[in-house]
Image 1 (cartoon, one colour):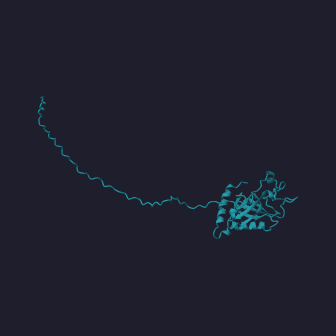
Image 2 (cartoon, rainbow, N blue to C red; image 1 turned 90 degrees about the vertical axis):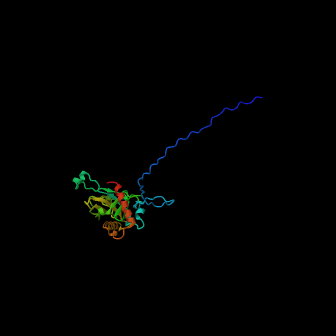
Image 3 (cartoon, rainbow, N blue to C red; image 1 turned 45 degrees about the horizontal axis):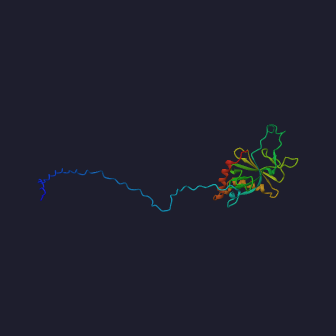
Amino acid sequence: MNLASPAPRVETAQAEKAPSPDVAVTEPARPSESVRVEKAENVEPAVAGVKEQVISQPQRKLGGMSVVALRGESGSDFEGNAAVLRGAPKKDILKRFLPLFFDERDFVAYGEVLRFVLIKGDCCFVFTEQDDPSPVYAIPLDEVYAIMEDAKRPDKFSVTISPTSNKNMSKDDLKTVLFKYKKDSSQAFQFTFNTHSDKSLAKRFLDTVERCSSGQDNKGPVRASVMHAKDVGAVAEKGQPTI
C-alpha cells in the first residue's frame, strides 16, 4: 500500500509593521478681501406683448396740394379763372432805345394763358387746370402789392390780352390786375379777368389780395387749412418755373 509523502514544513508567516504616515499639517485660512455687491439698477417690469416704442415730436405732414386740399373745411378766400403771365416781356434793343418808333405792345390770346386762381391765407396759387394735383405758381402776398391797370394807359411792362381789331388794347370786358414786387416795384405777375358775366370779379380779386396781404384775416386763431396752404405755398414756390 502506497502512502502520500508528508507536506513540507512551512515557516510561520510574519506580517511587517506598516510605516507610520506623516502627520498632515493644515495651514490656517487666510482672510480674503470682502466682496462688494453693487446694487442692481431698477428696470421696468416686462409686459408680455408690448414692444418698446420711440416717441418722437409730432410733425405736420404736407398733405395734398390740389384745389380741394387747399380749400379744406373753411373754403378759399378767392377762386376764379384769369389769364396769368409772370414777369415782364423781354424787349429787344429797338424797343429799349427807340420807344417812340418801336413801341408796339406784346399781346397774347386770353385762352392761351388761361389759368385757375385760388387765394388762401396770405398766398395766391395758380393752377394750369382746376383739377391739377398741384399749382404751377405760389405767390406770397406779403412780397407784392396789387394795382388795377388803367386800360387806356396800360403799364409799359404788361402784355395786351386779346386785343381788339385795329387797336392794341384789350377788350372792354377784360380787366387786368398787376402784381409788383415791393422791393423794387418790378413786374411780378399779371392777372386778366373776363368780367362779362361778373363785373365785380377783378375788383373782388384786388380787394382779397389787399386784405390777405395786410394780415387782416389773421387776427383770430389760425385755421389748420391756412397753415396747410402756407406749407403748400412754400413747397410750390421752390419748384415753380422761372420766367
